[in-house]
Amino acid sequence: MKIEWFGHSSFRLTESTGTRIVTDPFDEKKVGISYRDVSGDIVTVSHKHFDHDAVSAVAGDPTVIDKVGAVEIGGVHIYGVMSYHDEKKGALRGKNIVFRFRMDGVEICHLGDIGEELTPMLAELIGSIHILMIPVGGRYTIDARQAKEYVDLLMPDVVIPMHYMMDGYRTEFDELDEFLDLFDQKDIEYVDTDEVEFDRTDFDGERTRVMVFKKIH
Image 1 (cartoon, rainbow, N blue to C red):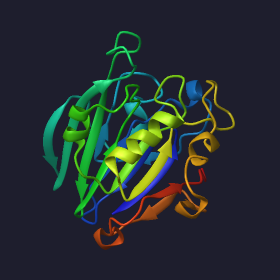
Image 2: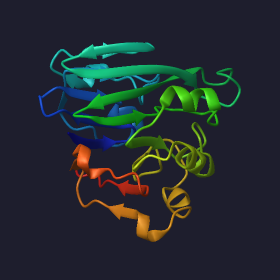
Image 3: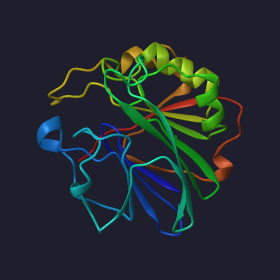
Image 4: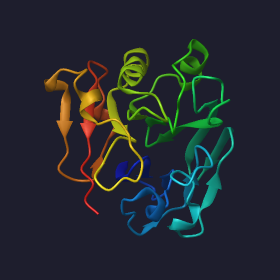
């Protein structure tokens, strides 16, 4: 399966069968960074904010999933779990959906704009995963320290940080380095592109790698 990063919290996950899932598309005019032409079969929306729910930016008449629960589309299993966008049970910024995907035998979790610390119940619902897409920019989501706690407790094989400060943003977030500094340099991989392909055999469970994608478009 292939993962492409479009910036912020938006990725496209493509299974070998061709099924394509776009996560949290954003409004480039309001966010301040470009959003390239994207098409997909499915769009998942973690919550209804302009930087996560610009469904109209995705071509292809996709099926939109913005509710919790389990569904299977095009051979892909999708499971949405309710969580909170802040540490006060949604009183500040509302709710957030954590999505888990199973594609080509790979378990992927996209945390959306999660703002609460990881509880035992949420950890159990997320379960064992290979790839974790996690916000690390703080201010409106969990910060670097909290994100590291998620990583330590969930123990994914691969961590892909998202939702951190980039040139052009109209909103201030924390820098990516604040998260990366919490890891050994040997466990950080800088990818000189915005896409990576994974196979089930790529994951041995022996260590956690942090993969930093480069936004090309």
